[in-house]
Length: 214
Length: 214
DNA sequence: GTCTATACCGTGATAGAC
DNA sequence: GTCTATCACGGTATAGAC
Picture 1 (spheres, rainbow over the protein chains, first blue to last red):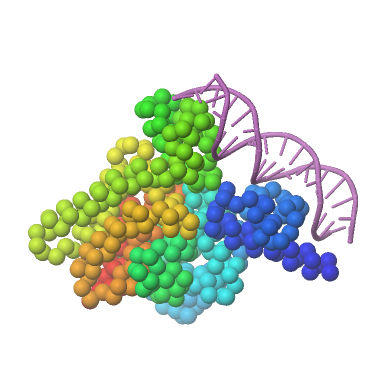
Picture 2: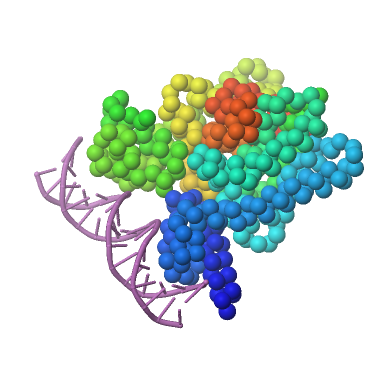
């Protein structure tokens, strides 16, 4: 009883907080809304996680390490698969994006919410500085290194600018704003991650080659 | 920071609100902070603009039409310059981005703040739906049409996915998160819009060609 | 140890007096 | 145009029930 009672309620608090923070941002959500959504008392979130800010960090960190390690594994697996030969740009980018696609399509709505939250953090001038360095910036460093070996003549600054564009394209995709649904009159759907990722890989690969190419 | 005595009071309120909303988002800012920053009484913002929400709309709309018309003019000018010949992809993208670059570099910090606010609105699942259709979506339609004539064999959905990536790359650039400064160890600067735009044009042009090309 | 009820106190938006 | 009062709401601490 002890474990199940604790686990499920604190889990629910994190899940609801994740969803609401992703949609409304940190300041757009109250502790009371979270408690109501999780069907628990107002004070319970406080009991388990401390201040609102600490709850926000707990939500962000819960899946950050998981996602980051998936990315690391994907990059290693891709390198192994190339078996000594240099990886192609497409393979590197695919490895970078694959874990996100898997998470999106895992069927767990929590992952979809988390990735929208990640988009919020990535695009916020405030939260980006606080939350991205800890876990995600390291992984980007590895990705950039892989890109450098696939683009041996590239300048460092060119690679970083291109990375910023990938990051932005990705963030807007994860944010699920629904804008593409409107602009395309329903031909494209924000929720169609297969299409989003399948288009993104050739798009950014070509971009890298044009800017950083041989 | 903020504004102690320049311009009319209602102007100052808009300027300060713009800056604070861009940095902290709608819910992260209070009417009292805005009033303090503008050096006016708390109630004056209410007197001039009504509710907080209406003030937010007023801030967003103030420069929306201006920016949108600049974009329209840039696209027309670019079409004229091509003088009957079909515009190149690069010319179209340049026309799309040029007004933003001009605004950024106008020396008016209000424009820089406004574009960060625009990035916030673009990436928010809530505000995007409310604020983007009114003014900006129309202009995107014209841009997409121009792209179609430069990429005659493109499928509609391919173009729209690519447009989303441009939009995301742009949003992250406008958001000024400072992340590229960290990741590149200071080699690139978020504030260097010349570099940001100069790299973006070949990057996205190549992306469009790869996905929508002949 | 887990959870609920409640109280506290600061802050915010806004209306109405001046 | 400005100042102030009001009143609701938010985060958080505490006391104690299970």
